[in-house]
Image 1 (cartoon, rainbow, N blue to C red):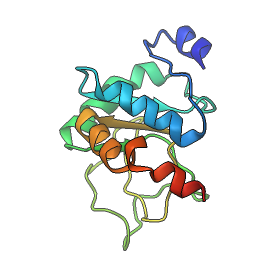
Image 2: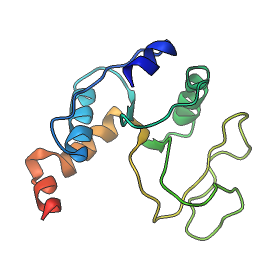
Image 3: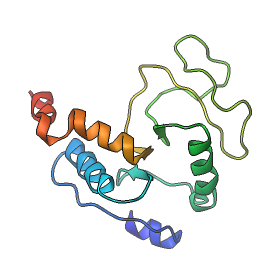
Image 4: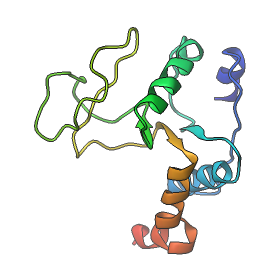
Length: 143
């Protein structure tokens, strides 16, 4: 992963996971929450980045802040293509038109995955307060 970021000339901080997947995310959120940065992108080491990722991240970040989001999934585990015309459990449309070449979609409640996401420092602190090591959540979830 670090080689890919170097090739794309993307500045990044890499965190060695202290254990399982959740522990790695908690470590990343902990490190981020102790910075002055307002947003971060957490990426698992097996994510394949678009080769033009670096040229789009500014636009994605601006849209993230413009919509006043707390978290934005940048990848997902969902066996169907994303569509604009889904209703029902999908969240209200935050972005009225497609932003070329990137499109933003709402998602159903049962989508899952933390492979790659952008979040605010405030939201990272909230996640840590609810699920961090001090809560014992990770240990309870393993049972």
